[in-house]
Length: 439
Image 1 (tube, rainbow, N blue to C red):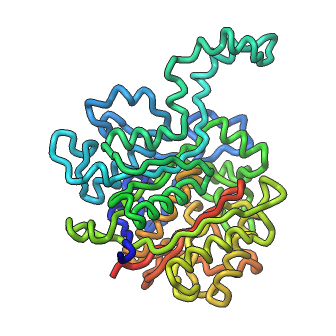
Image 2 (image 1 turned 135 degrees about the vertical axis):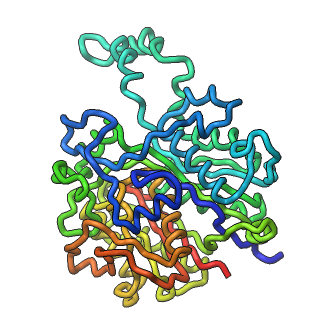
Image 3 (image 1 turned 90 degrees about the vertical axis):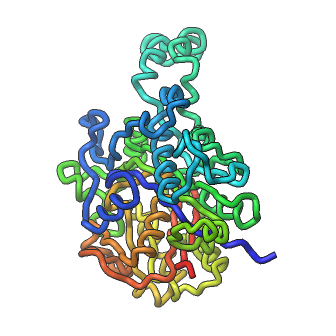
């Protein structure tokens, strides 16, 4: 049996640049930066006070009427995933129980599945406040009192808002997807790994349609404090939010929180052709690895894991490094990480590095956690399809040792046949995805 080919037929994106692939990609081309002073809560007491916040969502307009009771059990992360999945299905022209609750569906639910990357969802502090107050003694948290009194101040179904698997669960239920279903929680790599697993499910004939990607809201007090405590957050640009995220720049001073999600519809090629779907590109390779480091927060100096993931993706796609025109790296704007990633890119692409266009997305909307790798993948798909590469912002002074071909002025027209998106997390997981023009 010939190997089944996998194409991308739908793209759903939500982040600080807007909702939907058209609004998002046009904002990239227009040079828009979605990073501003945090509005979701008062950041005045935090060293870092900026973030990329996605628009608020009206879930009653997305969730079918018969399932709207479940909205009260949705954290921000879940909402972002549902909105991105809805956008992906509609962009693909697919009718599901979620997009057309009153009409006939045109998917086979048994042959349709979901793989979603999720983060460690941060709790709403307002919901926790009363429980913590009644679970403390003399200003100190007491496990005994928490079990005896504190937990009584949480609503019975409180935990269902914060389980990472609930992103995929809600999407599965809303759209009646009865095929393979899984959740992956590996920080910023979650969405990319989910896409890779969904790709495998189609290649190995476990499904014909997979909705895959990731979503997370990093704009909350708990995450921001965590990033500040481990010295990963940008702190020098609170008065100039639009300049805060500076991937691969000499003046990069840290990560900028974002919230958002990227979800795509992957489809077996012949299945997509039979229904006359618009095919954006083909997913041709997937590589994953582990980037071991003795320090949990700092990257491995030799960046072996990042190199392995990219090499595996190239090998599966049967491509040489000099055939790639576009790379979307992780580009987290933490100097030690950017240096390590640049080293890995040069090790894989060699002399071709100076010709390889590099577009670092986080300069525009921040780090969307579990959604980051999926948004980067979707961005590579759109850039290849539109034959346009947006400009990386806030990178006027790249250290000479990096040696990357970063366009920091304006969008450029480019003949893109093959593109790669690569991401990693400070926990060590790494993933790379190859996208090729569909022919």
